[in-house]
Image 1 (cartoon, rainbow, N blue to C red):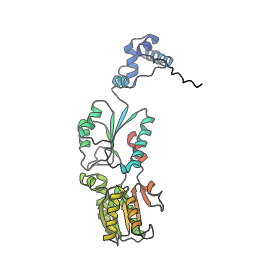
Image 2: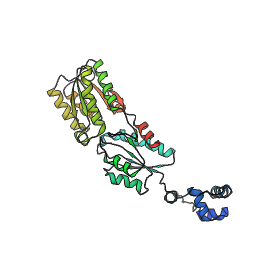
Image 3: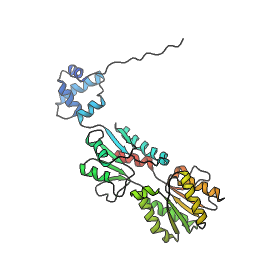
Image 4: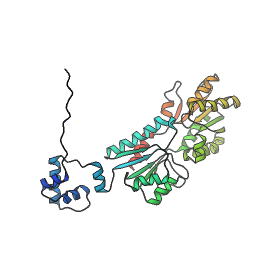
Length: 314
């Protein structure tokens, strides 16, 4: 007969018990734990010895109240574009690696949030600092955090980076590198499948950099370029790509800024065109996933794990 195991345990030591064991006042234990006041070396040594003997572990919220620090970093990733999910998870994994190594927690918010809500997370002590993603050229969240003197880091950038800590991929260089690669292959008609129209209209910085560099640099490589805002949704990207292939058959290559390559590949198959014989694709951002396809696509990787880790360390 199988018996269920019993759950056993013991109550954690209290600050009063620590004080009794060390022969000091409870306030002295509090000062040693919080560091708010100087305690004599002898008293401190007695308290620490009692803490070790009783295996004391301060309660997280109580420690936060005592020290004025939450030991939490808030990561704001307000994106409905969950087609980016694998890349987004990699950003979060990198940030979590850094926070865990420093005994911090990571508070993740994926909902759209206004500037006041972001600032309130720090002002009310829920987090000690903020990592902002999906940054805009003119980002009210950044302005609000600056005005409040709250610590924050960007993954991305805004129009004025003076005094701001940030981690970002050089989108302009990624697009230029892609153009150079396609030019070496002999392509003279190239489409840029940029971020979705709503992100471009909102001023999503990466989308504006990609568009501006593509339009400025394509002629320098002898390329006639067409800029196409495009959803990451496969069926929508398929429709956009199919329309391009029908109306502009002279275009023989494309640069994608996310997951549009899935819809593009479907449209190419429907048109009986093959990669790389008939059409070339360079994937920016989702390169590691594009390279897993058959045939594998050329890509410029967004080092998302490192970006998340560095932002959290900052």
